[in-house]
Length: 290
Image (cartoon, rainbow, N blue to C red; front, side, top):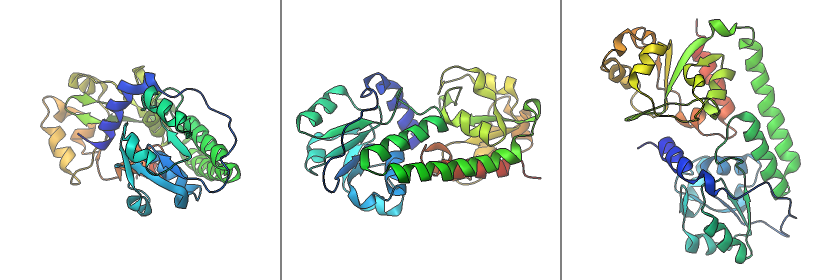
């Protein structure tokens, strides 16, 4: 099971247990001792120059490289309370995967907890920017957060200037394969749907209201996408060969023309953090390669 699928499965099971609305509390005095409970949160903290104040992360936090040297206090969505409290944190940044009981234990121990998800998952860049704002507010890095968002938006605007003139009907039709067994994709309301749109593509699964639905392979044949974007890493070119073996898929335009993208770093495309802008740029370059 891929890291992304682990994230999505836990997300679906735990969204109802999210920690509540954005909080406005004073910043703890002195140097912070922060624990991040998600890889994208860890990347945001480092982008805000808070890496030296992060004392605990999940076992999936692997970027930037310095994050690998921080104490692992949590699985993704399964925090270990004892290991977490052993780091004497004064701020824990949650992401909607944590059970209410855990949050209550932390708060009773005097630990401030903020949740940077609104509905259990981020639906696009607007919610990612809001998460960055929340983290900036909570850590005394509001100005740095504002600057980070402005830089990201400027890069998105540059891509939009390149692809924004493409008529919707002429946009490249893209199918995103999150997982192949069972087949899972990204529908409307997912940040991946937003990413594909900003890269100048048209997500064929946008018609599905669920953010991360499981679908019948026959649906992909009916959609006939021109490009297939594969979310899980493997040897480059392997996905195209695998998809060609699916019954009926050899006539799908993306498979027939071998326009299967499986060689862009998955974390750039499928981890909603500061590097997601790089994912938009990389995907746009591939979708509109001449």
